[in-house]
Image (cartoon, rainbow, N blue to C red; front, side, top):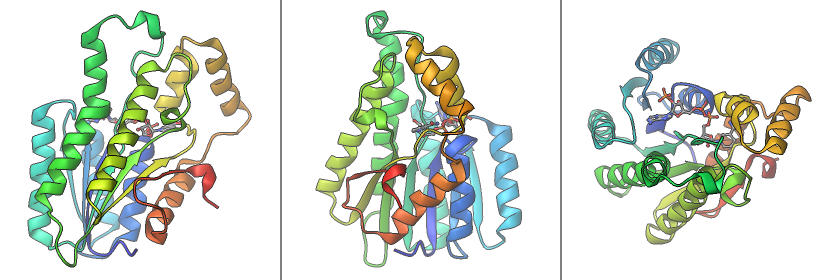
Length: 260
Ligand code: NDP
């Protein structure tokens, strides 16, 4: 699959894996493509968008500073993507559901008694990924000449339980199943759940310092000290190679460590 003239929406684009995906995507799409960066940090998005636009003159770059756990944030994101689509007559729609959070990992299962806290977590990490994707697929309906691709940035936590990660594991597991259903229902939509591997990001630092489970904290500290973390750029390239090779079964989970 060539990425062609694409409209790409990347959530969680202000740092970490999402930002690396934007940079790599910008280098791979054809001139005339458009890239939409979404996260809450306005200044960072503005700076990154300006940098990308300067480096890639044929690329339209926009950003939306939005809290994706709110209806207003979702609506503004969808509107910006629609406007970019109208301007460009895209050959490919690419949605990268990357934004996410760990929740309060200083709490174990039995500490999670507040329904409001749990609902807020699921709202960002499950509901918003579902509603953003469904809304964008409706805004860009299937038609001859348009390829549609949805990526769920996943984790080993979607399939394996980890102590102190009740919300994170539950959210990632729910997302995988949700996107597998999408793959069953919409045969013309390519759906990939990609596990990027443990990377040196803010999320990683949080686990090293805040996880309730001491063994998990130590595991993360050791991974960093022993140089065992995955390079963000390498993981990004692997994900885009998987997308472009286009041999995965739609709906499947592909992990960084599965890729040669
Ligand atoms: P980071 O915490 O570094 O980045 C998270 C991104 O999500 C930021 O851009 C943040 O931007 C955005 N975000 C958070 N909350 C919201 C919100 N309410 N609305 C909009 N955007 C939001 O995470 P990583 O880069 O480490 O992780 C990216 C993805 O990869 C996540 O889905 C994570 O689960 C997954 N992953 C990460 C691993 C790792 O080792 N790091 C391992 C396996 C999977 P802002 O604060 O500006 O809103």
